[in-house]
View 1: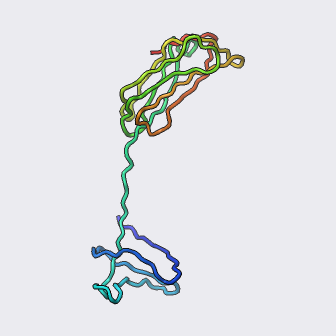
View 2 (view 1 turned 180 degrees about the vertical axis):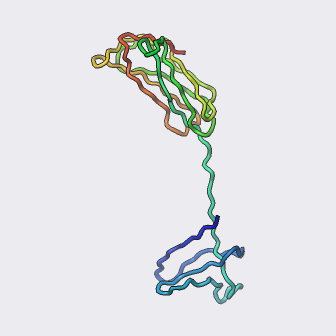
View 3 (view 1 turned 45 degrees about the vertical axis):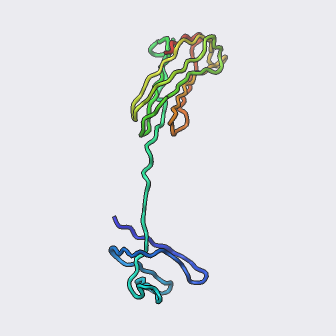
Length: 184
């Protein structure tokens, strides 16, 4: 692919600098002066060792490939005594949506509101390849939550030592009057 670079410069004293190149490729550098309808070929100035020869300007487009990064997301959180498929546990699906392997993934369930008699569960997953998922399951939660009166929430958070994204989280309202959740 060939690109043209057009630089518009307004100078105070008519001087402008750019690095020239001894490597000639394709076409010479040109310039245009306002009020002149034609482009003019750049030539080395008097006193230069290549005086009068056509001039190329040094120019390169370089890009750095973005490094592949780990990025976690929570795809779903389901379960509970009165879920559509009744369960004594809550399952959450953690997915690596990045382009690199996620390492040392730490996950944790927490609750807010309601009354929790038996606490939270956390764990680690050694690694997760790009596009892969892992299901993590709670241990036992015992508590009380009444929607609209005494609401409560359960949250899953997952992070990795090399996670380029913010920690992945998902929160769901506790809709059980008394909930027992079997967490792994």
